[in-house]
Image (cartoon, rainbow, N blue to C red; front, side, top):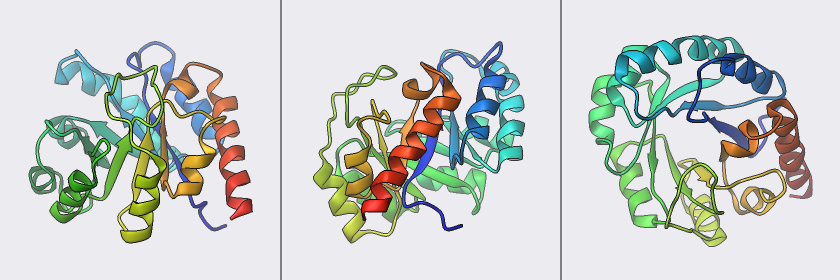
Length: 211
């Protein structure tokens, strides 16, 4: 089966303790997920590693890339599949040097073509644009428009991720505009995760069938 034109990229909720591992398993069982980003704040690296390890195994079993948010050091400690860098989280060159040639390195580029082109020139594996909609997870003053996704997908081969307040109900224009991945958090973890993943797949498939 060919891969769909747009794939899911799940971002963890802030709390991944307790029964979250079971929720992650349910989400990944509900349909293909390209990547899972481990995004936990205000815990030290040792505690973060303890929280990450069972989730990393679940992702490996499901064929889902395990990406660490912000921390090159934690990504290296875990042997993660990659790292996602904000604009203040270190350089692509540093991440490549410490994580190796095979690591998937993504960069937050807000609503900026310039930042995205810089990231691509530095060797990033994908760029992320957002927030496209108001987000329950993270406040952002940046609000890109669909034209940015259309421009990027037409001009560059480097994959782009759309992020920010994306739901099954509002994702269709992003898919149609050329987003390679939809990064979602609250829309999945704030509801029934299996049903939400299935709903995203239906919405993506519907757009793909029209193209």
